[in-house]
Every structure is written in structure tokens, then in C-alpha cells.
Image 1 (cartoon, rainbow, N blue to C red):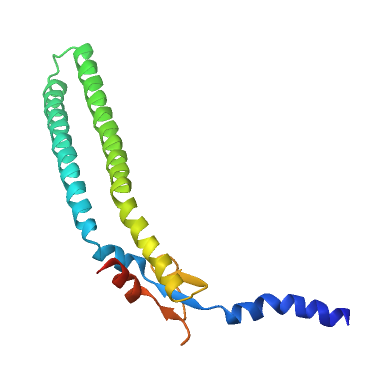
Image 2: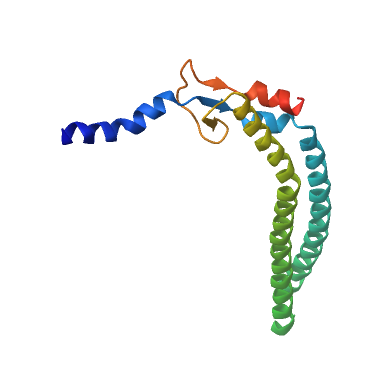
Length: 167
């Protein structure tokens, strides 16, 4: 009797899972259709272009200093102290460019998160609403978690989410 009870308790989650209603959705497909995404991408491109222009100025300064250094380094009569100073200037300029690149990348990433979070939140809210409308127990996002197989009873709520968002 104990053995039967133990087996029944072990199989209980499997029996409950067999009754669960499962849905799938592709949040990335929905996210890409959101009109706000195009606005966010345009703002990010504008910001990126500004950083690129500033980087090009820094690079131009570096290239000029490098050309000056090559001229000085090629002159055998030039004192070592001057050559060393030019090398230090090149190193400082290179460090300034790397620091700028890192700060620009961090700033662009922060802006991307700020601009896309409200869009993602709207998509997630619509997925929740569609899951509740469909009386689903679980919804897998195929954009995040690849699903190898879905059976005939699995419900694709992507069209329902699009309808909720008016897409």
C-alpha cells in the first residue's frame, strides 16, 4: 500500500501537467511590429550618429598626432625627450578614444533600455491578457525559449496579442 501511495504522489505532477493548458507566443515578432519601436530606433540612431561624429573628431586628432610623431621619429637629429613626449601624447589620445568609446556604448545601451522597456512592458501585459482570455496555465515565449515541439492542443496566442495591441 505504501508503495502505491508513493508512486501516486510521484506521478501527481505529471497528471496535473497533462491537464494544463499551454500556449505559445513570439514576443519578438510582436515587438518588431510595435510603432513605438521605429521611434525608439530613430532616437537611438540619432544618438549613435552624434557619438560617431565626436569619435571621428577624436580619431582625426589621433591621426594628426600620429603623423606628427612619424615625422619626428624619422628625424635622427630630434632629441629623445621630444620623441618620448610625442609617444605619451599618442598614448593619452588613444586612451581618450577608448574611454569615449566605452562611455558612448554604455550611454547608448542605457538609452536603448530606457526606450524599449515601456514597449516590452506593453507586449508583456498584452501576453498576460491573452493568456487570461484563453484561460491558459502556461505561455512559452518562442522568441526566448525555443520549443522543439508543440502538440495540437497548444494554443498560439500571437494573433490574440496582436489584436489586443491593435497591430
